[in-house]
Image 1 (cartoon, rainbow, N blue to C red):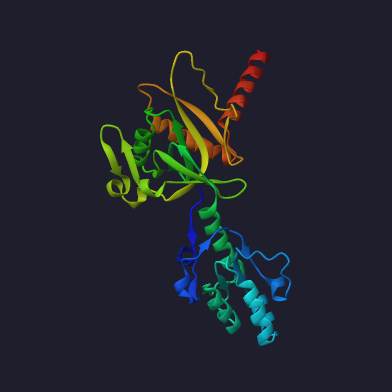
Image 2 (image 1 turned 120 degrees about the vertical axis):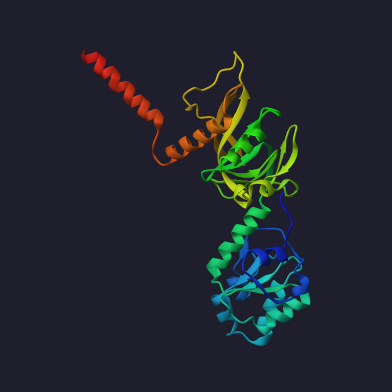
Length: 310
């Protein structure tokens, strides 16, 4: 489920300052879309989206200077709907008195920033997109390995947390243990983070709950990470069949985004931390254009060609 975001949260995370209406910062934002009300300034309200944050830039403010007091106040009052979370004025521009009056009447805060419209628009869209996105909770562990978000899944008791702890000891960073909240950042990226109640915490059977940040330092944790791959730990049995070459093409699909998925057999004596670390490095190498499987094929073809000549 998406989080509840208030205007106060927007102020604290996107370099905004309160110009007026500081007592109304508890208004709730329900959508990550931001409006640039250029047409509305001319009186066209047929497709006005009142539930969006309204961003006024150089175009809107300069146009307002051409309007009479009564015209601008009428437009401002139409824009100041009960659903409107806030007005934002960019580029350090002065807010027209008419907007201040209309916002005060509707109990809407007015926010300002010295950033340009495009920059503050990007900041607000990124923040609200992450906070308001639909979330799916996955049982597993998320670790940042060499900058790659590796989602480790598997049956309960298979050793996910213990493996993650060893990875932390090897210098990698924990994002979430036991439960990973995943949301879609855009059409190609999934981001995972820990639920607030489990932030920086890890459960190790026989030991209990440990605070990774307290034990290993701030460099051992991350607040969130883009998920690059999924390693699924499976108990090794004689009947089980695993892809030995790592090119099966399995995926984990969440919100329509496919994440490469690899099954890793778990057996006594296998150092899973080193195996997962190697899998992450190999995946990174592939993304940079180097494929060990292709090299193996080339070597095999070369050997076959040499034997054919003899």
